[in-house]
Image (cartoon, rainbow, N blue to C red; front, side):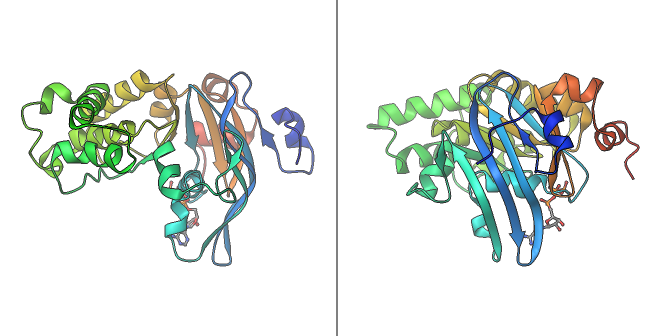
Length: 275
Ligand SMILES: Nc1ncnc2c1ncn2[C@@H]1O[C@H](COP(=O)(O)OP(=O)(O)OP(=O)(O)O)[C@@H](O)[C@H]1O
């Protein structure tokens, strides 16, 4: 295994670059990760340490592998026929593909929020209560009620739904459904929350509310967000990884990436000159 080296130094060597965080300890890290769909390599030998307590944005042109890499962080690719992951993904140092870690437990620790809000076709209450119940997090109905309320509070949804917890989650607006999905992820006490373009199906007002929410949750979780919006990456993240052709070309603080990118490809992409 390679020791982490500064990104600039690594970029000049022939070995694949390793991107340690400049300040924060790692929560989840990739070492030499490649992801294949059949013969096609969508992610090519990526190593990165994703820090605790920050929002990390994955940016890059369409098809560069952002979602594929995101999904490899909680084994979501396992559900895609023919998909294969090589290398190591370490959650607090434990290899999520090779240890005895149960995938259901893993996905509680590393939650996922999708592009299109996907509440269960069940009540608002049940959308939140299901996870804590199957993971044995709540010992009593009273405790479960408390988790439901706290999760909805943290997702900024409690005041809007407290009088209609029995209504279907699918009856909420798109923005409310997305906050419900975030509350559902929070309810099982995750350490990492992965968000794949969580605002792309939402209008500007709902988007602003989700961005505020991400900011409120920052510090409590390691959050990773895939986004096509440079403005959104600049608003919500403290760290940014720029992907290109299945590799991370550049990683750093969001302010550095947006003000003084080192790589021409990053510069072209964030200034809209990529073509
Ligand atoms: N289920 C799949 N089966 C086969 N190939 C796939 C699958 N999902 C993605 N790919 C391919 O892997 C590559 C990376 O796709 P991915 O969706 O990860 O990129 P992305 O950067 O997230 O793109 P976008 O920004 O457009 O969502 C692309 O060439 C894509 O066609």
